[in-house]
Image 1: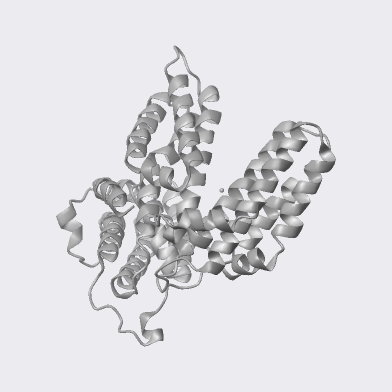
Image 2: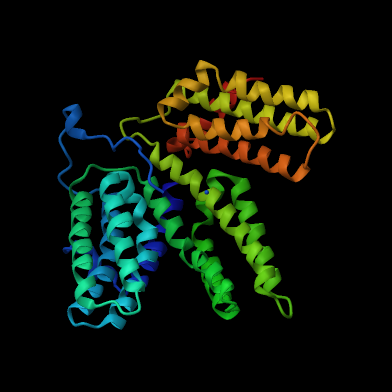
Length: 399
């Protein structure tokens, strides 16, 4: 997957830099500058007696380039405020969130407190201040200066911190590619279909650069995103499409894209660089989760046939026996993967034992299946490109 990843990265780095109005050379020199998750910090080489890295890895170099690409949005806002130019400040600040949203996962993983200070404190306060019609530059300037200082602290964290998995580069690519899509709903709400279409077109061009990262993790995530994009494009091809027609179709694209993004993000967050290959414990757990999926599928088949007793029994086996087994429960809990999966399994179990709304039951079943898939990524996604992994998990799946 390294070769696949490198193709997308080059284009997506340039995309991020272009959005910031920078060239690669301007950022690479390292000049000053369906969210928070309490994951364990990345492994500290010094803690194990190994020497701390003295030079940046290729992954850290990309990370540093992308993080540095966000800084001009802040520094340009500060410069405009220093001149009392509120219009210029708002224009400069408008470029910050799309860039930040694309790369925030790096900072979120490295330091949750710094991430929260950047987003929930300084960014939120600047957003509120600049949204005030009669805002004074002198009042906003100290906020922007404080954000800039905190940003430089985040850059230093990237420069000096331990290596993190290259999968975070995939996550950044996916998040950067998503940025035009995030703006489409607002354009539709404003009934600006021309802008909405231009943004969606930009997103589909980005999708072509990253869809391989989806396909390698989940054929379903890839094909469903492709189908959702095709549905939006078909709607736009009609004579007079309306925002009301397009909005729910765009929402499906966002949902399916978000699922694929979640798969890669979970694999990145739960990776452990101290491991050189998958462990037997994690493979056995992943096989157990595959067994849960098989029971969920059998349950849905029985429910659709009106055999509610069997549907309930299969659901109970998934949630009360397989999920609760030490083989599955212990590794999931160790990686904080158990809670979300348990909620999804319980939600399906609540509707699987009797007749009801077929759409609601099917949706709950699908959510549980996808929660399983996300859990599997958290268990063994770090080694997804290893050709031996799939057969090992298949062998560990209950028959």
